[in-house]
Image (cartoon, rainbow, N blue to C red; front, side, top):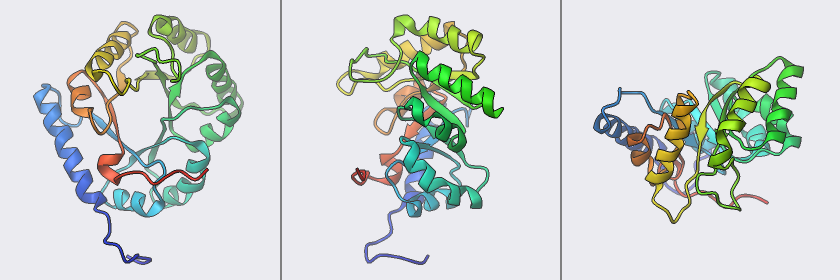
Length: 233
């Protein structure tokens, strides 16, 4: 309760309750088991004060976009809450692999062979292994990271069979100007034919659609924490 500013406190707990209720409704509408969808609270660019509000409301799974930001923010929070599960949902440069493996529990943005091989090397050297999601560029957007849908099966085989990586699922970020359900359905189809059980898809504006199409993880930031402050460059 210390270090309050003059502004009223942002109601992260209330927002979390609302989002959880919407997720539960979407699960019921889709005929899915209650609790089958994991809420990844996207805390990128938000400070520890808002994150602590979410922790106090029982949230334990969080998503961050940048390794450096997470390194600065999460060690102190983990010290108080060792059951935190931290997902990297942003692009990962190969020169940050060591830091990412030390900081995160799940990496959702495995998107190219060079990165997959760097992760395999790091796991081999440290004896650590993280759960991984492969990012699929369902819209085949040139500016966006991810494996093209046509290359997905071969890349999944490379990661699982050749590199022995713990690939648990797929992730996508649909194009902003297209119907997301088409992209969610495509991701689900690729996952099914490769025997992958987890689908990270759906954000604040479309997670109910994603749940209807099989999402096991939804990444929600704005609806919980409010608009993001501008990142520090």
